[in-house]
Length: 447
Image 1 (cartoon, helix red, strand yellow):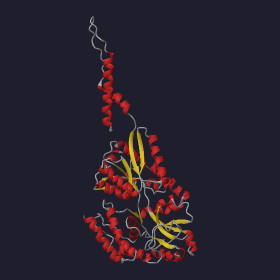
Image 2 (cartoon, one colour):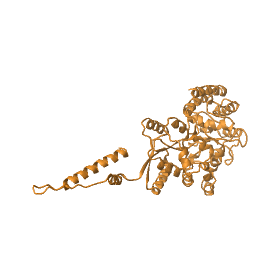
Image 3 (cartoon, rainbow, N blue to C red):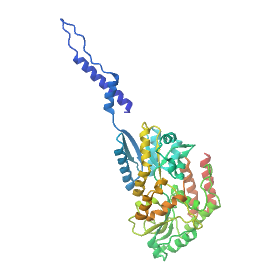
């Protein structure tokens, strides 16, 4: 029952109680005297006041997210902190199930007009959700809040949220990928465990030297199956490191079928053809059976207790100093049907604030979304003293890219991955795979 219905029911209850009181208080007239009826007068304002006392309470905000494990625990602490500091608002956090289920639940909620007030969603979902006309534009809200500095956020992140000249989200977490290597396997292979590769040639040579088929050890673990975003998300790193682009400037056509794209896919497919790597199901590095792989800053949540020593380095490029990465993370969106947008914004502003982000990043390993965090002396001291292996991720934000902000990204990624997987598995040439991928992606965009 909504608030208007509650108000109406409460007024009816009070009115009936008052009427009953009036009737019982009237004196029974006698034959000797005709008594005037005695009634109680209750003003409409007084009735409404009593109703307000019945229904008064904090404004409830429903917040959906899909953080798990330690991240979910930290988010729960932040929600509790906000609730304690804002007696007039009660945020209820709802942790959603797996990534795919969460997306389905959001789509179902939009269709049935039962969306939450606010949600933290994968940044690549933002354009599609906006395309469904369910997300509230934030321009006016941000303009009215003098305490909120949108320019303090890293431009690469906040630029992603601007669609058709309107802003629909703000970042709340960020991550990127760099190279992780197994120091123990490097030592066993006669490699210096303190020296990671800095170029593609070095990486391939180290991968070949570190490979040990007899022990089931692969030099570099690439994501090759199943098709989908896993392949696309990781290959884009090598594409960008080679100087290529994924889509053109206005996201209207494929841009990867170029000499840079062919260079990147040739490098990857050549390694996968027995030169330091082999196509296989993902998981070898975690089992101590891969010398290197791409992994994200989220790994600190599950690699801390690994049975082997490991370290992080910047993604190598074709030449020294040429590096790239792929930014991931979640952004906060407000849904149009929320009846409490002012309260929702207070919560969104709190979660994305410098003070909250300092706590969040140091507890979770997420990357800074604000300059005031990334350049904060306390944060940098914490990184250096607590987890110096995080530095390549922090420094890698400056060379990172975001995936195209298009509502058709998932379809594009699926089409792209299906074609380039054929080159990774040695079923076709990199040139033919990219030509087929270009055609498939452009079909999606043309529709």
